[in-house]
Image (cartoon, rainbow, N blue to C red; front, top):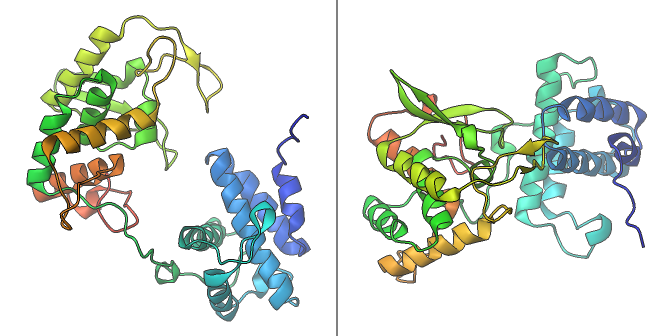
Length: 318
């Protein structure tokens, strides 16, 4: 049987029963859809629907955003912390902390954006603050200690898989995200006679393009990959709706992130690395990003103010 088509934004917000809030949500989601990925817009729509459903049940007198007060958001925060799963995954259990946190972040972005844009539908004052965002019990991966970082990178340099060897070296040497690495194209290196070589990073989590300097070892790893890559046919870009000459392509296919994670595990095992608990260390690709940013800060190359993006656990992000 054919799968049903994906609902449009206008169809999604029909789940919001309050006309004033539904109109503002539709306008907002349509606006941010021009810069955010479709999946991000869908998640933000879900969060707004959850908030609207709570208001309909607990505060039916609230029909417009201008009627919201801090008391309403405080009561929602308490409800959201233990609210049950809804929709097709509905079950009599509270949502995960990650889902609860994402809902608060999405709602805060919505309210903050309306205030920044000066929309008439905005609440009269700020209703959500950074301190309202729930803290996860398990923190995000921290930067690797210097000796662990050194031994791990030495083992990565000996990996048999050229994609894992090059990809992990690039992650550590530039601090880019895993998705950004996989979306790199052949023209991603920019050479300047006066400023050296730079990596052009494609649109990523923040929907922005940027450049990152390349050191000699990272540039050498890139050159080695390109030399053995050979000619490859262009493949459809998953987001830009055009053919793309991806940097990482093998035999007409794009390698997966799983190979990078497996290569990272293999390197940690080969280096004999262990965590503080004495168990075998299982680093993640995102830890290489934290390690890159932390090493820059510790060396005095950059400060917190130098990085507009920050990881959720407070570590500096490139």
